[in-house]
Image 1 (cartoon, rainbow, N blue to C red):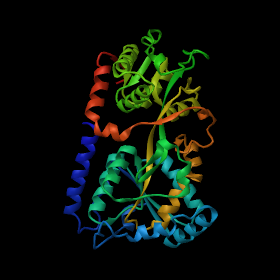
Image 2 (image 1 turned 60 degrees about the vertical axis):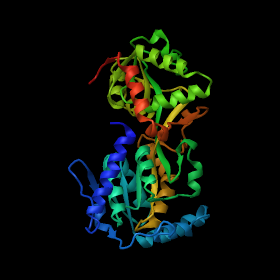
Image 3 (image 1 turned 120 degrees about the vertical axis):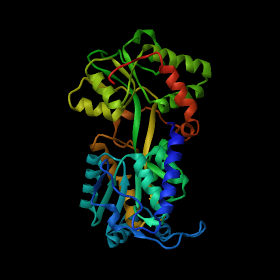
Length: 388
């Protein structure tokens, strides 16, 4: 199922369910495939009247109080207000180990009890939409994948974040209604035992060279990476015909694998020499565990697919939501980096110096998903599939 169509079905189903359960205590329930750290629903409260579009919610009034405040004065005032609220409810698709560490450090810093609902990104989207449509105050912030964040924002349930911390986020991570907290960075990676120093690919075009025949891998679902690289090449003056020809030459060199983690494992095992579009953090984690893999020096441009955070318009704990967002985009970026992910500010990463980082055009991919997914599938149709 294509991205836009899949999200549309999820939203439609969520809205319908929200209408059915608008009078219940909570329109959602945790399934066996979802994990909850200190159940979030227990702190929620149901509203009685849906505010008109032109009216500010109570949460938005709190956010507005801090507009234009900066530095230590903002942090001090926000901390006081947030600690008076005493609670924060987060819905996220971060892996459990990462969000547990994020929450632990935040709770050690502030006198705020944090509840977390963690699930897959599509399930997080469903829950947010269901609860918002039922006017139920479930979460204060949502943090998940770009496609789902765009879908949530389109429902008009997010309040804009205007804190100065947003200015430190890379341009590829700035969106209407939400801000990137972490990014999946697409880069080529290689087995250091099969690709000697100085022999690493220096450009994306090089991966179409016949010298890589049978030595590289492409991931089965990376149509988003393909579109990002396609747009970049088009901006450099290449024609669509020339770009498609390059991708087909790449595919003729490639073995196809489903899943970036599996792909990285096979790379470390020497199944192929180069992975064309890997996530940098997966490679870094594998290297830290002793696998003979690397992505440095980074081929430029790298392509960023963001995951981000948004403030809920109906948050029960708006000061805590705002404080957490500020913190996650400043001190919290180091926690994210320490957990092996790529922070959206790219702060303190010397490997990124001089590397151009361009956004994956998520909105275009969602609007034209049938076209790009179909083209990518066609390009890969004659390539050998391994590892599945």
